[in-house]
Length: 394
Image (cartoon, rainbow, N blue to C red; front, side, top):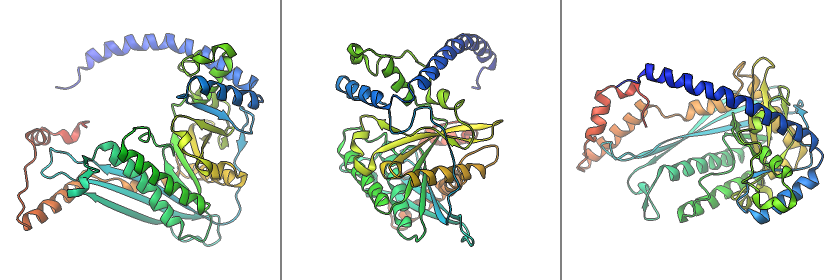
């Protein structure tokens, strides 16, 4: 049955009225947090000590930690001289489904390579790595593979391919990926995740050894990492056991703080990420981030840019990553987003027809070998016959 739009319209009106009241309260909290950001801008040492003391009370604390720049500092992008290579990687995946004729999965990694800053740049290049998951690949360490595990393989493949390609370059390399550098699958205390996480760190280490300027681009972030730092600043010393649970600025995000503060092309101050998993990114692999505003005054967007310590501790590398991302976003006009990442996504995406072609190839080969193949589930057949291709399904 279709969505009942008349029922929905009534709910929309009711919920919108409530949202209007909440927005007024939220604006007050945004103003208070913004004032505290400016008032605490130069209290870097005090805030760092506050985080360390709070960690003794709450080891699961997740927040920003100030580095060496005032909290409200804004930095414009510089022109980076000299030729360099941009490698952007993105991945897509097909998870095995018991409803198909045969269970299989695919991890597709697309890389877009382009040169910039030189007099005679080579034409852009597209590289694709396709990994079929079939047969024995559908089990890992005695368990059936899950979507989370495939997603971790995808993230790992992106870093592995970037490290392999970067090693072949003579020019300085800037490597871009979509999303954070921190893996959210990692905290799961399962053996398969733990071993693959070490592989992920190994690939990051290879990029560090090559001196690759690496950055993860997170568009429209909803994080409140800096907000949580400010909330810590409001706590009295004797109340630090409430760290991470006390939210006077509830609902306020870092975007609320930095979007009005930054001009297009500017970045915020640099922060270190404090989280349960961040402690596993040691030394050169430590996780840092800043906020970047791109676009124009009429139409702009804010992104969180995550960089590893080997980039964060080198001012020239920070400037290169900043400048490259600003120039990349400019190439996309009034919808700013890194051009190379957009191209990498186009390369990596697996379409429905391609999935069907792969399934047909596998089925044909199994038939050739005399191996019996099952049928689609009745549910899948009925979904296709009822026109599910036009519907949002999972």
